[in-house]
Length: 583
Ligand code: PEP
Ligand code: MG
Image: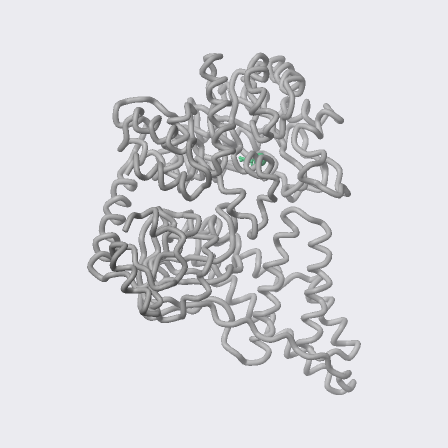
């Protein structure tokens, strides 16, 4: 049976290791075996029995008022529960690092949030039993967060997770969410709360797969950081019962139900060998036949840059400056900005650093920049559009960059986000050149890709932001778990635009990189190089995987894979076609 046939089979009794004739025989057997296919996000193979998150507690039914005399006890019950939940999450945060620690600490912070605790206590004082008071207060905050939109809206999942932990604690039930299995197991779920994913122990949970979620979801980001093989957006996953043996291949996106033990062992060992090759990769980026491709890191502050600089990243391909100022109510001064930027420039002294000017708005709202009451923020005044209305904010940021450049002796590249027209590119380039900075723009809007040649008349480089480019090409919200297949960067329509942009760069003799999540996928990275991109920039944790994969293939094979991918009709067959060429 071909791998192509094995794809997308639901758990229907077919097996990929059998021939078509065998399939016919098997149709009479209802054995729950087969291959489910989703979106691969963290390469590697894990096999073991399935564990599933413990069910969430039922919400309490409405209840009458607690008599005055009993209210102190209710308050006590809630205070003890919130302290226990916060302490447990904080202890896990202390034992974790990076994004996992941040997520756990943030959820612990919610459990101690004065506003939230105050709202619960107020409801208890008014006669509500503690569980009902907690639910009501959480809903009140969730509505507020949802209204604020962007990253705040994403925190609604954290709030609901916290509510469930509080309810279980007050009821004396076990903590909801992910169990800590005795033997190495595979975690399957519909979706995971950030705190669930962040608390995973990679020695117990050797792989994970979710029915929902996209490549940029919290689950994907944390799994990547923890190095747990992961596949998301797997249809049919809910039919696989706890205890069933499965194999998850985070490189191919396959979840094999009831794998043959010998084949599973072989596949796991091959993945481990690949991992060893990744761990020993030191750069610089080049294909096996010596074609040079810069492999860079995405960072958001000096600490992240220092961590990235201790690994094999050659430089920074995307410094998301807006993330350094997410918690600011007022615009940072030029001096404050210069210090933040210098932290990153110093970490990569003498090496390339591409700094993106503020990409405020939509999923990254900044209190001091842009409009906040737009009906459709992703299509609104965000990124460079804010500066078109208010050039001062861009000028002050570029002054801060120029000051950091002067202090560190570096000449950073700067690029503007959300550019749609050549006139916008020229507006930005002029301001950057005045300050002796190297100007470029991000290609995130299909119009920019279609007119790349014209953009390159005023700027020195382009950087493809495939996260937004996918969202705008496919008209599908990048945060929507339901639309993950549409926002998959392997969508041939998105790759057509990448090819067109890279061709414009080649014709102009100017570099065109990729800094969206597409560049974190080692197989897709090879395809992007085949399409003509000159650099790949990814989360620091993904850099070595991309570099090692590239080092194992020739440029010609990358180009052949790129041609094969562009001839496909959907992401699944595009991946298959690339794998057939690149192995
Ligand atoms: C992108 O859109 O691909 C990108 C790199 O920018 P961000 O993810 O920060 O929007
Ligand atoms: Mg973007």
